[in-house]
Image (cartoon, rainbow, N blue to C red):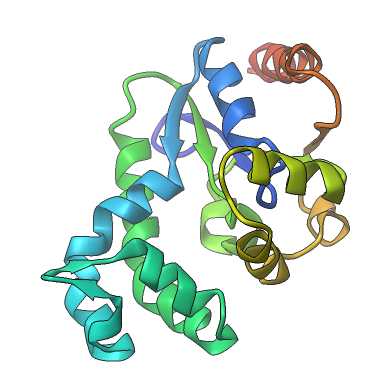
Length: 196
């Protein structure tokens, strides 16, 4: 427990269904925190650092152009690690603030990089890995408007499910219907509530 909260951390690669799983858990009484949303929110704070490092090409006026930034960081491997070095300390601090301020005891964190953050894993009581077959992940991303090249660039910079599975307390193979995912999430929440 961190600050009196029971924390479920949900991780997994793009297209696995992390956010859907988190939304389902929220219907069962968990408070939702999205690392992506926090990341978007801190961009104005780190805009000068990003501009200094990546140059004016990632800016739209005084604001960071998220699409241009993504294009740069998912094309050049070193660029992604520079972005992470600049953004992650602020993001993780803000994530902990959100957990502390959560209005209920059960918190679910939606974070693609959950398993890459040892300091966040330390405060997570129940790490959950959402997996799915690669073809299905790709189909889901394309169905929501991402092009194949963009999907492949992002996916190349992510670890595979087998590498992450050792760190998970629960693994959900999200290769069925939303109802199947709902059932699996419900049983996990039930087990967690029963354990406390």
